[in-house]
Length: 293
Image (cartoon, rainbow, N blue to C red):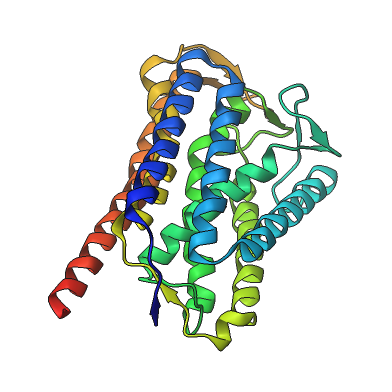
């Protein structure tokens, strides 16, 4: 396994700059309620994801990953809006993003941004610090990464739909106005593009090379911290959000304070937990490697 050198002198300051900018934008979105700050944070994370991925893989593979996620997510979203499969019956509100057909353009970069961070966390949990894919990882990496990705949707969907109405569930749902099937559909969607990407990696030039390994702790910790930075909004809404009644598509009435509180609790035991565990895995792996040396 070849070791890929990452220039700590430049990578860490640049990565920290991405993290700080993301934290500022997410915080501004929470404080002001302006969607533009949330969209801007998505763009920042997407740029970081592409840059980070070119170091781990290369720019051609990351371009493939971006285009793949764009096409797969847009297709699933469009089909579900038209038929109800796999997410359920819903539609997007207009005015907060340019549209590509029935889907806001910014939805696809959001899938890519958080999709890559979730993929990286999945790699950490499986101790996959290289660019190769093989063995049980062919299935386990897409499955674990999909769970990590869906954790984000569990924490953000009720705010963006039931409260902010960026999209509207026609018949509401059992989870704070969101249908149960939505999260199964999300898993199917993200598993699809993860599985295709695994096959692409497996049968591209990576199978003809030993792969490249990256041991720099900051390289793996920064994506985890960017993933965790999205939780600022959920805790901020719980602390600062107004408490008023909202009605879901099925006629069920919720207090926004109850939604914010529920999601803050869910965030602790999903996104925060997996981020904490991933960081612990990075340090444990490094300590183990040091002992072997």
